[in-house]
Image (cartoon, rainbow, N blue to C red; front, side):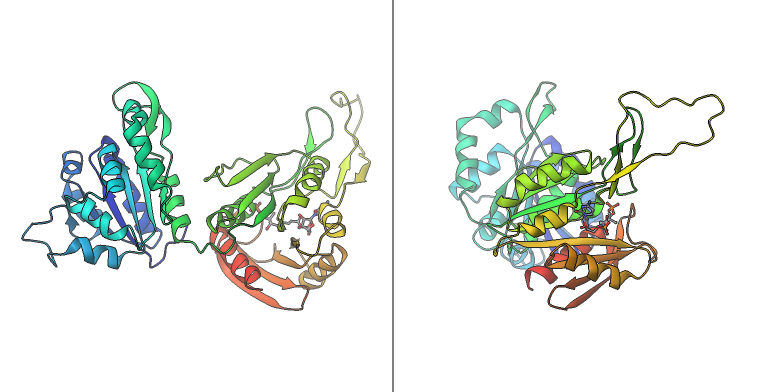
Length: 402
Ligand code: PMT
């Protein structure tokens, strides 16, 4: 994830989950962000200012009246400085104070002056009984009505007090995803996007299959970016070992074969405004044997007869309505542009994203890609080698402004 140049203000309140925040600060800085930290007094019972200062590279603001404060009004200057604020862990106390406008320490005064102007993500963490407290639930419900506030759902699991229940702070990757989401433009708000990702597996017999090297990374990066920008996403995924970061906005449907992917795509396409077909779908599949194919004595070869699978892109293209846009991908090894343009035309695509296996670091498996976007209007946008997350941003920037 790239947070290059972003200013992130991390607020920490007094809960045991505070011990995880140094790891988050490291991860945010690794992603290119500048980080400042403000804490409640009680947070410093769980974590030292020296740790936070060392990792963030800046003084920690935890006492409104401390003589060492740079400006004496950090609760105003920090909200001005930041692009967004995260509070993690957010205790029942902080949620209650924030929802009632109480500002009586460094953290809550800073939150109060951020609340009307900047995106804020709150990550509650507490004992399950405190989470169920009607006062906490009321505070959360109210905060969720504020336009710029996201309150994450605590997760279920073992709590610090030893019981199992709902109240754990979401993991660091979920917090980072929520930060990315808060910082993203909401230009796909109200849109429904269908995305296919990963390869397909075509059974030879109950034990073996024909597949390809797609990991789903490119398609999942697109799904995450669309969700960050406010879209409702239907992600139709072949067999891949990836998880969705924000399940609330991404409805994932797992499939195995090209035929299955085709069936699900046909059902989901009428609901979508935009489809991005990133999956590497098998073009041919064998007739699957009912039982495991055995080697015969003296046998040196096995021939498989393959039949053509449905062309999903083409079938969606043929039923495309005036308001719908259809984007395909092309993975090529030679005559790249020529092949991609032919596919765009044959499949009735509005644009095609070309990646070539001749480019180092592009295509299957790797975390990076390099693509050229070709549109039916004859436009061409090239995106240099970068992470698949940044490629996904570039594709959406190019195509949503198109
Ligand atoms: O998953 P990763 O490891 O991150 O790798 C990403 C990727 C390389 C798989 C991805 O970037 C990519 O290029 N996906 C498309 C690969 C491909 O199969 O291209 P194609 O040229 O065979 O197909 C062209 C288009 O038709 C694609 O949009 C494909 O989804 C679609 N298609 C193909 C065959 C078929 N039967 N039905 C289809 O809809």
